[in-house]
Length: 224
Length: 224
DNA sequence: TACAACAGTATTGTTGACAATATGAGTGCG
DNA sequence: CGCACTCATATTGTCAACAATACTGTTGTA
Image 1: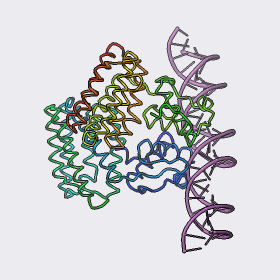
Image 2: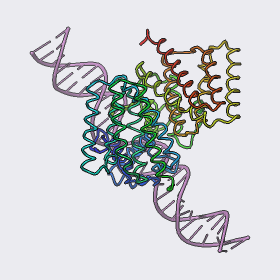
Image 3: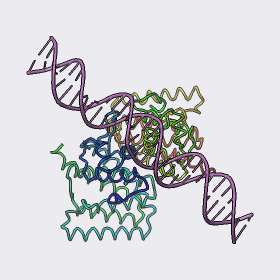
Image 4: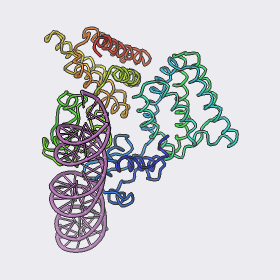
């Protein structure tokens, strides 16, 4: 969402934090590469103070790892770590979906349908290849998580895990995966939400993410 | 674990971060109170540079909230937020327990039994009041989560959520709750682990935490 | 009395310089 | 040829001072 808007923030640290985060997530800062403070401070035209604070915030998002006296480097996710993240995501989004199902209003569901319709239009026009890459998929998940009403859960998923997943997709160039299948599952999930069927909603969401994970993993078998 | 050892770390920022974290979790820095940089820098004998980095790391742990141009203040959890955390914890520890059940060896289970035996001894000698307060309960959960083999899950639960829960207990002086009941449930969970019964293990853990949550919530009905 | 403008103070944000540590090239020795 | 050592360089860690913003209490006016 606000990933695309570096914009200027109230403080320099905020601004450069946002810029660095998008740079990392987009792969402009290569995974595993060192974060050079003098270079970046020159590049962004700020001193090292606020820059270091920004880096510490990136550490909080798990986008960089800091080793004392040696500096920070952009994280590089291997297959094991990706599986770990997907396990967590599956559990938490299942929770989010269950909560959303218990609270979703008719208007909420209408918005979800609207979202899916837009995605479908994109799929038609762009041959379906960009459904995942254009973050359309994440839009859907964003909205469901926000409907859960659990603000901490929203921050955990949308401010942390999703960024990591994005990074991983860039890192492995893992692109569009089974858009038509995902599309069908999304509609099933909204069905469950409309019926306020908490258990089913949770089950479907977990299965949905589990499927995506397995697809990703099989794609990765040969690589790393 | 290392919460009790402020010790000195490789860097001043690390050291003061650890000290501040224990201070917050123990309630020495009151929830909701402002984090005064000049005061703390004097108190810990360091300059504001590393102190500010430590504060940013506390923000990453969600132990403080930072408002631009206004500084940081220690978080104060209200009932709604506590429920949110418990919902997340229930989901994630359920996952951890399921994973642990699929991997736990006989020795692992023996260690868990040992742990429970120690706790039982403490209960006998101290009349059961301190089972929760002495972190004996968390020891058990720590071990299970580590047995899950999911390192990110471990960090998420043990480096973030547990600190928040500790803070909340201090904040509300919510002490020992149903130790004998918890004790029985712990043993049931180990039973499931020994049988590598993943589904049951997850179910029992979720129910265990859900029970703790409901107890806490009912205790809190009248307060906030 | 209530409220708005103001000034003074305290705190946060930022900077550049200095100290400590790690990195890497080059050299000498076995 | 390989390895350890040394020294130069670069980077990280830390500090104290300055700038900008927020806060507080006062004064003055309606």
